[in-house]
Image 1 (tube, rainbow, N blue to C red):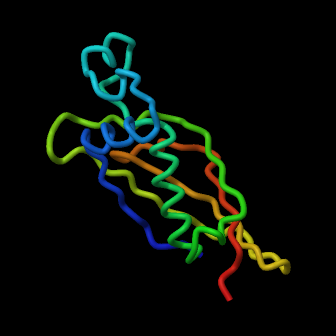
Image 2 (cartoon, rainbow, N blue to C red):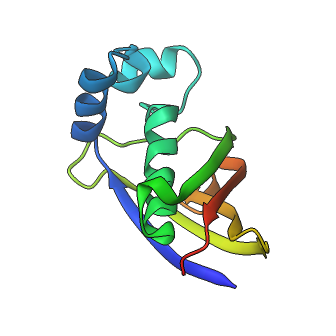
Image 3 (cartoon, rainbow, N blue to C red):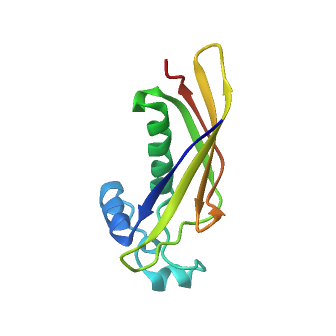
Length: 130
């Protein structure tokens, strides 16, 4: 069973807010000059910010934050965020892989940006809604 896709817009303003909240002021998250100098295609979203957005999708599917039992990802590609008002979008989808007798649902999660997977091995286990 496929769960409804959720879409999250990410702008440079979001990256500034996340940097302030997390304390991660690495210039690859705000300076095109630095990002391209180190070989990136442009300013990229913080990996943990991307993971948090995917976690928000999992929480929505689960129905409550405390229903998420386990959640993990591997970062595959950076999320490039252009310097405009539109930013970019991350689309998050999931497939139910298993519902156990113990009341747990295992999800395989996919996150894409501009048609490319940005995470791999993204999986979550949630308490099955009753």
